[in-house]
Image (cartoon, rainbow, N blue to C red; front, side, top):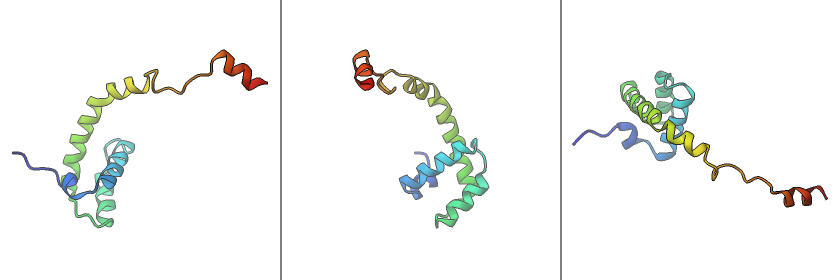
Length: 92
């Protein structure tokens, strides 16, 4: 059985979600700053643990990219368009 990441075992879901958002925004770099941020919040996470988690998360993120793109372009995900009757009623 493999060892679970300290990121998963120590961070609450909302903090981990914010971390993942910041990883994406930073292009999966900036581990030193992110480690300082987490340590400032009171979570003792090493740079090495964050780097390992970031590498794995980046790999998973890139694998899921085509699926996210399909969902984003899915007709069900787009805002409904107004039909001709709705357009006319909004004019009058």
